[in-house]
Amino acid sequence: MCIPKTVQRRAQSAGSTGFLLQKPCRCANFRPDALPEVITRYLDAHRAHAAATALGAFHPDATVTDEGKTHRGARAIETWLTRSASEYTYTIELTGAHKVDPDHYLATHHLEGNFPGGAVDLHYCFTLSDGLIENLVIEP
Image (cartoon, rainbow, N blue to C red; front, top):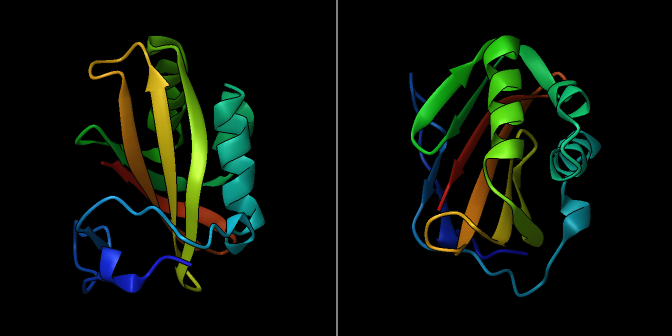
């Protein structure tokens, strides 16, 4: 389980992700079972470039923030999913999983591919509501 020093909760406010990431989280005790089914369904579908299946894991009015851009609602998220699946070729490995609280989860991935820089560790910060992803923030 990740030590909470690597992930600090901050008070949720308008525009806040609910997470403050200090540094990459390489979990000593990797816990993929710490992630709920809806998150693993999204991650598996995203990895397989199955945009429709991945989209089914989100609330219709969900938000995704990736590369500093926020995508709101099903149509915008579907466009983001389709674009991200076709823009670069890369491998992705889940390297850490952590339950912050019943509605907040962190999944850390290592990506390697033909994008600028060639390799990166990304944190996927999930907020759940009613069994679906309400908010996803992806950042280094």
